[in-house]
Image (cartoon, rainbow over all chains, first blue to last red):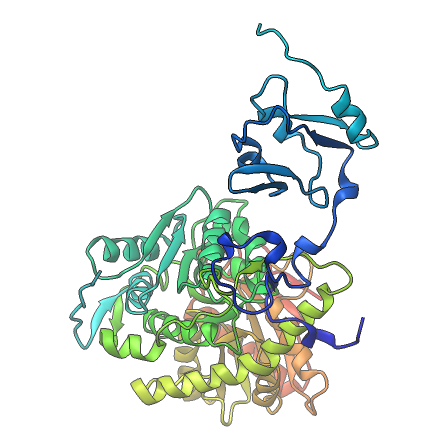
Length: 130
Length: 407
């Protein structure tokens, strides 16, 4: 790191999310936003995770529950269609799987080392309502 | 929404709390987030009443604790509003964590601190324990000696604190009850003059600027924390001091009332002097005048700005004096008093033979009487005549039981 001292930051414990001004950021997809290097979007916290959610789109009804409840904005949804999970920012809390209302669930937590294709191939079948 | 202006008389009879509330109204504070505590309660109550009566356009946020009160102020300041609150004593103690957040985040907030003792034993009366507790929290600290100064320093505090080269929160201290609840003549500005002096709030890095989203309150570890704190100190020393001077000058131009970071009374030819804060300054001034009639060249120094500490000015003011007393109104807890230490530090490398002694007084609202100060000036004169300190370096004034002396 260059030795610029405190000229390297603005006063106050604050960081800018984007380089330059932004317009309609809510209508801009994450991959199209000009994130600043200080924004955590470019930082991976995947190694914080012990369990991961696996998404099976065959049962998903695009209810958006997971998108609303995810505390880390790690559910990728476009035009109310669930696309998958941002595995760089998901910390494996399991809330998405907990709130998923389908039967069988479309999101299930597995150990971090589980293989996605294998697990989807042996996805649980519909369980009887109790 | 529009608000009503208030017609004020040339001289109003206000106590320190109401003077502060009026200043908050005239500065058109956007957000007051507050939790009441004696003796500061009437300040935020006053603002709330002005708001209810449509004399101010702002928000009063009722919270569940002083910690939350300052947290609310921090959020509102980061969002880009003019923000103020008030507290005392235990409230300040609970708030203290967030004071460091506010200064580190460089958010301009004006905190009216109505000085009161800290428990235990529980006590609602005035001493400077709370002021001393957060002296290193990175806030600017002004000290008012009477209600007029509470009013003036509030207006000054907003203008200094919000300046973009400063962006540092400010505390305006006043003595609990002795200033806060003692009605005196106060000469206010008109609403337009006062608001004109403070100026419209100019936001900086505000969260409500949706074109430039920011994250406030980030984390830095050993990599950058030191630079942030160093810069905070640097700006206090480099930018805050001249801004205070400049604002004092502008205020004098507007009102004729002159403030100095170090207030000097009868100091031109003083042989002996006391240095103190709050209402004690006014008592000491009166006694100094009387001592002069008895042939003792007595003077008084009042600390107007405790932070940034007026190191060079104190040294300059005191180095020609023969004997000086530092009066600390806070339990020292196993050390010399804060003022004693700060003054000693400012004199140690100066070319001076001044004799410095420290006195602890007035804890929990115990009166500092004129008789105490007569004895004190006589003791200083004896030191000056002897050319050395004849007592221990730390003594207590006005406490029951045997005479206490240490160090």
